[in-house]
Image (cartoon, rainbow, N blue to C red; front, side):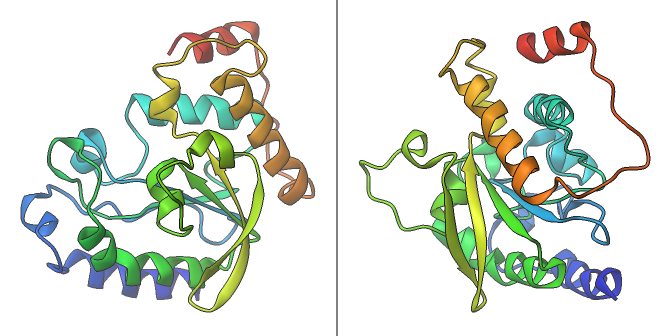
Length: 218
């Protein structure tokens, strides 16, 4: 039933021209992950160039880095997460989507969350955070990341946590205590422990020193 409902939303989204982004996109970027097994909805900002080309979220360098962090935390991108963005079409030059563009996509975003009905929501980056939480100019993502809060989507409350966007981590390579990458590890570990600890996957993921080094240097 979930797949059928999501397909209806996808078809409407494919034909949407509610904002100017519909005229410049190559592909509408709807989602990634398994809607039948996903326990967490992860919300990013907007499609980038590679996402626009292939129609999937988080497939560029930032997405590859996110994959590495998820794997290290024991979170399956394919089974545990349903990944979406605040807008479904790429803003020109990868700029931050406007409030008008986010508003035009809001009904699709909320419909996806309603259908998945996740245990929790992960807000990946400042744009996703500000789409659900009112913040002032003095409030930075560094102050709110890693904290559980309740957000309301279409009248229903969900526990939510904000994490750094992986594009930010591409510019911060340190793995020292308190560094953004170390905090990302801690946040994903907390998400795993609280909402995915009872989930069993078909195959265990083994980690090597080489793969951990690759994560640090991406």
